[in-house]
Image (cartoon, rainbow, N blue to C red; front, side):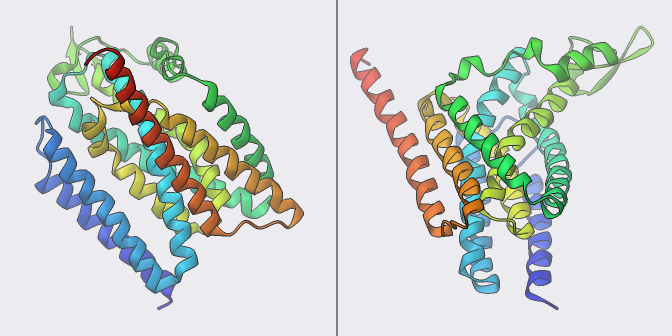
Length: 312
């Protein structure tokens, strides 16, 4: 059995056991998640991702491990922008907190399946048409520059969301949450509840983010193992991260600029490879660490300074 096969099997077994553990021991149906519980779950998923990093280091070598860590860190930081949009969706449809956990779980599981499809197609295209990497690089630079100058409140208008408009035209919807159900009977006719709409929007929103994040991972590596595992681990940690940060997302208002710089850097990295200029993986990791930590620290400093000005 090859080292790659062993790594894939280990990832699959660990992932299955982790999901069972998370669902069975850390989650209960229609129960609100406290900050303490969310912290435990976040530590659990991040710790598991880091344990897999150590496993890859010894099984597949330090280069693959560093690529995995770089890709995971980028995906994880992009998750915070995901969470901001999730909060807007929940607020727009007035979802009760008691349903948050289950709706997030279903939406995230759908997002994982869609990401696997998206990644598989992306790998097939890049393998056949290598020049697509340069297109991805240009797109990342444009996205990064746009993100740098875009404010959070300009990012999403649920009412004008294409997927939401499509569902309103195609499906019989109701403004009720159905007592936690996805479909209900009203006057003898089946209608889809707001919870169903929210689940679909969560999954589709994640795919929108994946359009930026997955090409960015291609800029770090074309290793299938790294691309799949880093994405899946980052997405699985979204639910606990949502409950941990939902009251504090605004405190990271400048993390977006840090992520934007990372996307521009990765885009440039992909483009300069056309000239046979290869930037080492440890340089990419260093840039990601500096930009993400810098965005977080600057956000906290600005937040602290604003509070001091307001006399809080």
